[in-house]
Length: 347
Ligand SMILES: [Zn+2]
Image (cartoon, rainbow, N blue to C red; front, side, top):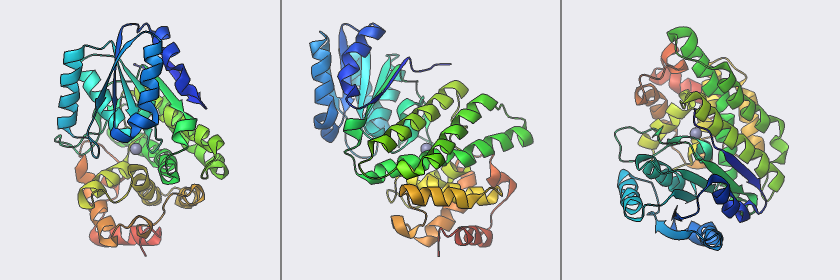
């Protein structure tokens, strides 16, 4: 089990990156992997603080947009050349993932400094990279520390925060799928790990009123939930507690209708429909998503109705070894359409 040793969430927590380095015994040199925008938002500040701490600091700008295996290779080249003691990923999900995977390949510790909260990757050991042979996340390494500054993250458009909430709410179905795989296929299942992920989802439901633009209190709740999900994956050593049929649907949607909606938004839509398949209270999931401002219909995110049906049909083939409710209830074009329609995802 690889777990983060330091998790700091709060207003102004960025100021503590120097202390974190000292605490963890990094005194010599650090590499910051960031993007063009996030460089100004946070990475320059991190660089200055580490420099004040006496570390030699270098910055690598990973290309913007979808992270590809080429970006990871490039980052690995920089790590090889500079031989840092620690790699910082400062940015949204993509920069974090490039930093996480490249540092893992080069066996260098990694510290996560998220500037967004749109999904649960900030504390997880998994990375989503395009250009690999699989459209889903792969194992990289757990961050040694997570420093999430609410003062920084509050400035991203609220849509990203709502998307983060939706990725957590999706744990209602992912944990149920995992349990199902255990019951039907005898798969390894860890009750504690599943509870941790489920509790995070429950946390979002209970605090749904707190999530609104500019609410730092809500953001803090979300960050705690996202870190808990990440830790659940660290403990389980698998993404299963946090990624079930609703994630398969989202991955399928990435192929059918690329770059339309955010990952969390797609998982939220998936969770509504998969909950219905599981005979769970799917309305609670939909109402919570609505309350936090996440989309509950394809229309809201500009996804064509037929693409929703297409993704539902494609989902079970994305990761055939991952047993979910989609293996139990084989959807046909007709039943997929009905599922999307009765849950209001399409009209
Ligand atoms: Zn996710």
